[in-house]
Image (cartoon, rainbow, N blue to C red):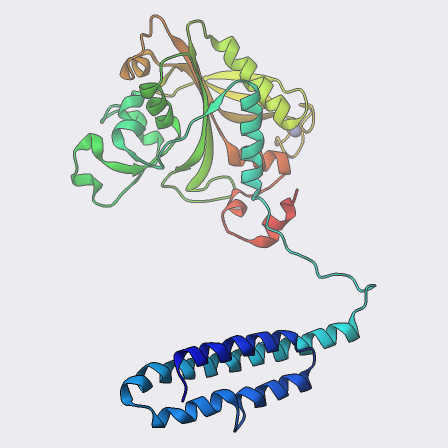
Length: 347
Ligand SMILES: [Zn+2]
């Protein structure tokens, strides 16, 4: 009659024997030896009925489990032998190999990495912040109090239930990456030299050049003697490296509540040397983004002394940079997940 030790012995023996088998006919012999009508394991199972109930309860499941295991191993070995045989017959070293599909970066990720690289080289660190922001960080701290008409410039997406909360705590999807400036300045003393790339959200219809979700790149530099000349240098140095040719910038007055003076900047078209082409709509200049000297009230809001420190901030669209660089005609292509588009950017 079988006991636990015997079962283990049979298992060990089976494992050693199956290892050595090299052809299918031997495998069949092995099956008969263990699982045939008079096989070792078959006999054990048959002896179960003569066992006392207590012993049967232990040995029964063990032996049945082992039967399943043996059958499984035999099956696997059979397939292995079959496959090995086929390989021997059909290997043809001149046949082209199977193409391996590797994943690769999204064009926006490629551009983001280039941008971070260039700014690291100019001495800027990368700061990040949450995409779900409070009303305070998105607006108030940036010099846009509750009833300020300039709030209409940003078509805000509010989060469910947020209307009933304390006004400063109300939640929204950030409409720009500027709140990261505030969070960073609150926790760091000047000098400050950061960029904060990230996704932002606006409640607006999509078309060729607009999307409700897009990437912004924000830059901030604060120190004791910073002026607009530094801003211009940084913008031109960055974009010249990004496009791989000398870029000139052009600044015009504009309005953003968190800068004074506020500016809008364009760059000489990198594709036609300002002669006019389809990229710049024959203007010779490409609109790039907004900028300005950080408003003294914003500096006060984070505990900086505006008499001692000043600096510039700028923001531009990463999507637009990528569209210019790769001549992509429609911003929606970045977000619709169409692999036929994305596969074109393998580097
Ligand atoms: Zn052009």
